[in-house]
Length: 102
Image (cartoon, rainbow, N blue to C red; front, side, top):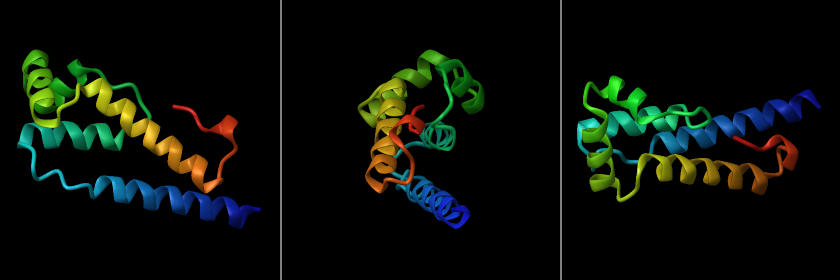
């Protein structure tokens, strides 16, 4: 059973590595930095003020640029990322449905 759990953890880590390798270079450095933070902490609540501090910009400016470059709001992006992660976990069957929530 422990080996099974270890395999599951390895698969989740591999999935996260794939998500992190998503080509971000098509975005400005400002948005790349915000996206990297969102992807790294997809399972935590991140608000625009926190991202603005990390990117050294005003929250309104960051929100506007994020929407312009990605076509989504930061909240929409986070929700899509979480949904895709949950789909992956459900499809692999590594975790019971009751354990998959963000």
